Amino acid sequence: MSAEPLLSQLIESLRCLPGVGPKTAQRMALHLLERNREGGLQLASVLTDAMQNIGRCEACRDLTELGLCTICSNPRRDQSLLCVVESPVDVLAIEQATAFTGRYFVLLGRLSPLDGIGPAELGLDQLAERFENNAPDELIIATNPTVEGEATSYYLQKMAKRNSIRVTCIAHGVPLGGELEYTDQSTLAHAFGSRLLID
Amino acid sequence: MSAEPLLSQLIESLRCLPGVGPKTAQRMALHLLERNREGGLQLASVLTDAMQNIGRCEACRDLTELGLCTICSNPRRDQSLLCVVESPVDVLAIEQATAFTGRYFVLLGRLSPLDGIGPAELGLDQLAERFENNAPDELIIATNPTVEGEATSYYLQKMAKRNSIRVTCIAHGVPLGGELEYTDQSTLAHAFGSRLLID
Image (cartoon, rainbow over all chains, first blue to last red; front, side, top):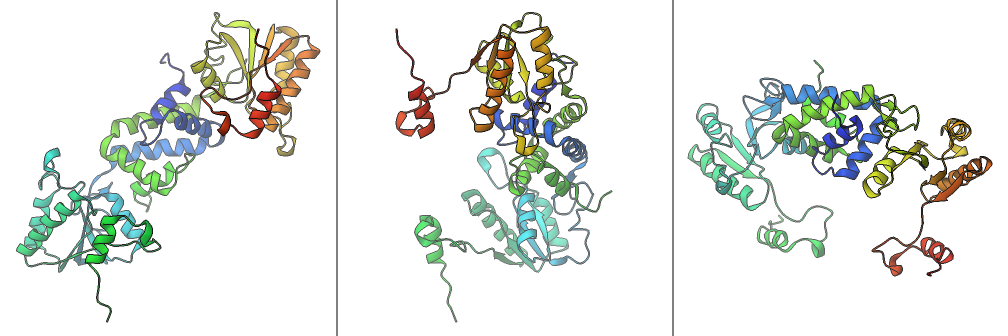
């Protein structure tokens, strides 16, 4: 048995979660111990299972405990639409918000040469192979509208055009429910520049 | 194997932590899977151990995996000073902030008759027994300065006085580094009413 009391060990271990400082970890540990031991045990079991068994989907690089993720192995998902995102959370966000029925390709990052992240790290060779052998009709680029996301988007556009694949990009502009007054300058400038003809 | 993907199960399980909503749970799950699987496994193991083995100290009711907690079993901690607190986090806070060398008694709650929490639920019969058989010289009351905490404090004062034990209460007033302008009215009124003679 370690010299450290188990409660302190638990508080210390909870701090491996992002955004959890000493006070939050204390509150979490006490909450689980006093009110929800069942939940704590359940979390521990799922956590072990997930850390040991979740790998990447062979086709789309999304996180999954299976060889092929549930989306890639679903024959009803349209092979001709391929949406490229940066991270598995983006897949979750799009699945929850939209009625998209195509497939995904998850970069697990964005081009960032200074950090040593090039096309190979993002699986773009795997994507290029797919463009050769099993090309989609439309490539939907949904990288984040940051500098690196835009650079990645540009690289993907070039790749798709070499294979004569139609490329689209999700719309960027003033968010719904937002107010022009509180929209940041670059978003507003972009929205103004990309104005659409109402016909 | 459950129909739900393991990643979704993990996100769902993380929501048993207090203050963790769907977005935070997603971020936590992704962080552990992509950057800190070791930490996740370590957390799972400590979590299982803690949920199964942490109980209450026989003497002070604090949370511990031992029969007697490390403070109660430490012969160098002064038996004649007994500090009563509401929760195990208060013990941690006092240990971190002060040089207190006495022992604790943890109520694990506060008197709240409407919620069915009376003296028995707070272990006050156990405390009364201690006052009879092994009375401390001084009882330091460190309940929270809320209405229920004050009611609990008053009850403890009565108990101690019946056994002729000296009772003290931690000081309440304007916090150090605080500004009078931004101190709430009741704290300021209390601090004014409890002013001390400078000699």
